[in-house]
Amino acid sequence: MFNSPLEFLAQKYGNVVKYDADGNPSIFVKFMKMKSSDLVTGLPDHTHPAFIINGVEQDYILLGKYKAGAVSEAADSALVSAPNIRPIRSLGADQILERIRKGGNGISGMTVADYGFIKLLAQKNGWKPRGNTLWGQSHSDGTNWAVGQSVAKDNERAFEGYIYKCLIAHSTVAELRPDLAPSHWLKGRYIGGISSDDARDANTQTGYRTLNGSGPLDWYLGEDAGNLADIIGSSLEQQYGYRIVDCELQILENNNAAAPDADLSDKSAAWKAILPNKSNDSYTLVAPGTVGTLHWNFKDTKITLDTQCDDFSIGPKGQSFTTIAVNAEHLPFVPSIVKELGLVPTGPEDKTEGYYWVNFAKGEFFPRRGGGYSGGASAGLGYVYSGDARGHAGAGYGGRSRSLP
Image (cartoon, rainbow, N blue to C red; front, top):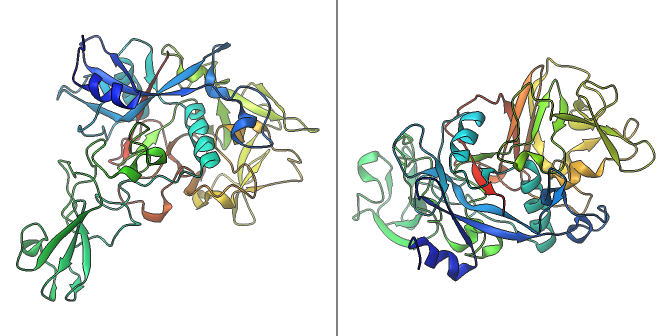
């Protein structure tokens, strides 16, 4: 007997339902174990790190089908993976993780290893998911309506997930919003998600987020309704198990960050730096601060993978994911792990979309990935924003759950 109607939906698409302590269901997508070499030629012939937790290989991983959202208005309620609810926003990384973990039953926050696996899987299959990257619709599908525009007859504008055709030339004002003025606009095809947010932009008159799973099929990974929804857009997703401290890349081994009891605090001994091997693409995980570990550097006007950072006063810098550089003098071989985690391109053949930001400054910075509600063409599976501390609670920051089998 089904405990929730969502189990019918999950069964239809081969998804997995898990319940939290209060009986709230979450839907997860199952991904079977794969080798890194099966994902991208040239990567190591071993199990991808996403499938190794505390030394134990997992036959599969469970990733939240939907962005983490709340089913209760209580400020400390558990976050779930469910359709047609608002993605959580405006919480720091630790707050999101705490509320995701309230679900119990092996549930924790999606990790850098999980995301790296998805990035490589998408690369292998040629998937380029879209999402809410322009106030309710994909930036690829239309120009959004906004106050203060001059629109001619037959011009098209996107608003709240639909395309509208202009019937009368005019200058746009709030009173003639497409959904309010049928004399000026003809409603057309559906291209976006259902906008749902308390906060609304003064110019576009729309909310930041769209309801989980409310977008078209190309907002699902691989255009498959059984796969991950909204992995791009609405809100950047916090990825656990990777941070930057004084420009040094620090991670947890394999996918140990996925364990519900993993210590991800700033002083945790689980954090390790990556010491590259000088003769091949292997590496050793060592104590943070060890000389010669992987660092982000800003060299020759590019974000560069290096073994040092030359200047901590530069601040945030960004560029396309595919143009990230490597200081070959210091790194004749790029450690395979940073490719497996999706932190650098796998090679010239890697065309993963997205913009990459690194804050060249002292301190701890946490990455958020994917692209937000106004990211436009900068969004993508290669999008990483590492400009803020773990406690930053921007309107464009959210998360996603994952679970042990």
